Image 1 (cartoon, rainbow, N blue to C red):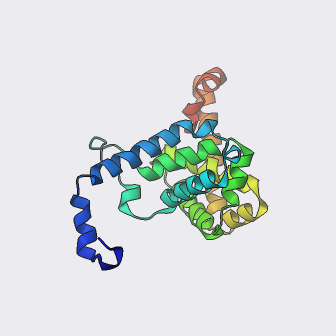
Image 2 (image 1 turned 90 degrees about the vertical axis):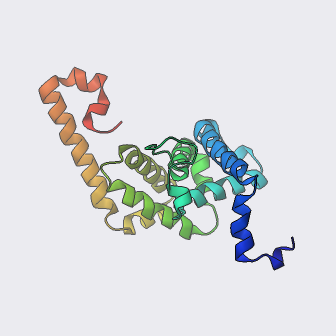
Length: 198
């Protein structure tokens, strides 16, 4: 059909098409694949035609407020917490292992999306229930802030980012001292996650 003549009803009806489930599965598989291979990817070795859409897609899913991005993946069992946003945050953390990848992320056009990402990461810092997301937030904030002073400044201007980071450090230190006093330093050295963070 001519795209100009499509109505809203036609767009809604296309979700009933046979291929819609395939598109959802492809998206899910792509996000899982990126989360698994991102630690080994050096985006600067690829042409702009590849790395810019990849980074645009990752940023889109990281800041997207829709339920499609934040709800559990459709193929997962009930109670699963794996969402597109969670997979993307994991992939971005792994990409940040390389300083060149960090530079490419920060060089993406429309810095306002990075500021949106920083705001989301700061809000994840305040959630003590989601330890994995909290650690993703710390890794990303640390890596991106170290990448350029404008990113560090943007993070510092988001309230209450500094106090949340200090709170995280103080809680980890307190927990480490508690574990060391009750179980010994060797236990803490062998099991560092006992301080409440990996």
